[in-house]
Image (cartoon, rainbow, N blue to C red; front, side, top):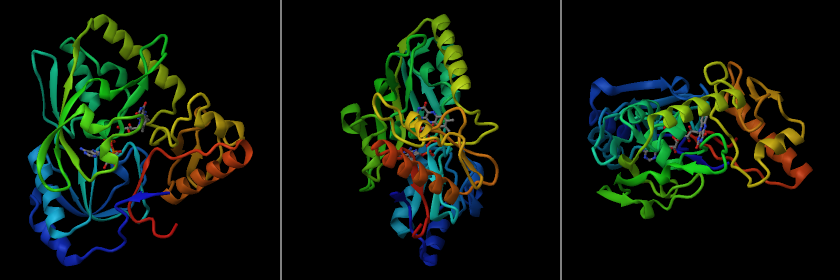
Length: 324
Ligand SMILES: Cc1cc2nc3c(=O)[nH]c(=O)nc-3n(C[C@H](O)[C@H](O)[C@H](O)COP(=O)(O)OP(=O)(O)OC[C@H]3O[C@@H](n4cnc5c(N)ncnc54)[C@H](O)[C@@H]3O)c2cc1C
């Protein structure tokens, strides 16, 4: 399983230089990351920084790059599995949450803005396009990284709607350290994919283009989508998860394959394949990243052996997993 930010050691002088360039009030050391993920798993970050503006975010990434400190940027931690040994170097938890609605339907948002806050604001202002994604934990940056998607609108649910449909542009901090505006074409969106998967660029802010909508219709979609999710997915408040573990297999469904090989409800340590949705693994309490990885391997091996399908993870594995 490929991992991000996988360093197992870090140069302490580089770390000290990096720390010295960050705003002390927003910097902490040796911080357990589990509480900042939706699955409540993950060891410590050497440094945890919480920028509160896009400029502050850019400064933090630049400080890490210029001091040679390994770094990782996270949003709500809803699509990542962090190693039990944590992440070496600097973890940046994006709290840059300013946003602004414009009269022509454009919504500018810093990349740490949270969808759960933007969606009701948009609906109340009569702007349509975001309501489909209600109930999905995500920052705007995470949504763009992954091309957030959902089967909507109700009742037909005939197609997967993608955040790229309302995406207009993003201001990126590139790997080379420049700030530039990327268009939809530049982002090379696909299912579960944007160019951010393959370049160490980060999104500082995003401009979305919304359409005028009927508030009654939007409220109906909000209610229907929340109810649909509530009935089909384990409830995050009680059963922490990262949503779907495996990528969709068109016309088959990774969850259905896992169900077919008899693994629904299977438990390893504190991690369990959900009883109600086999593509979602839940933390029953005290689950480790190692438990989840072992469950992933078991599902992959059994599904391939018994059905011939290869199921691939859609979540990012982040941090010091060592040789496991
Ligand atoms: C209960 C549940 C249900 C879910 N349902 C859905 C669903 O229906 N549809 C769906 O698409 N997803 C779903 N997900 C997955 C998840 O919500 C999305 O992938 C979401 O976009 C993750 O956002 P985040 O802010 O938490 O990103 P994180 O998980 O924190 O980060 C994910 C990746 O994005 C990168 N990233 C974050 N911000 C930036 C940035 N500003 N610039 C560059 N890279 C960045 C990170 O480095 C990391 O590699 C679900 C998850 C849960 C827990």
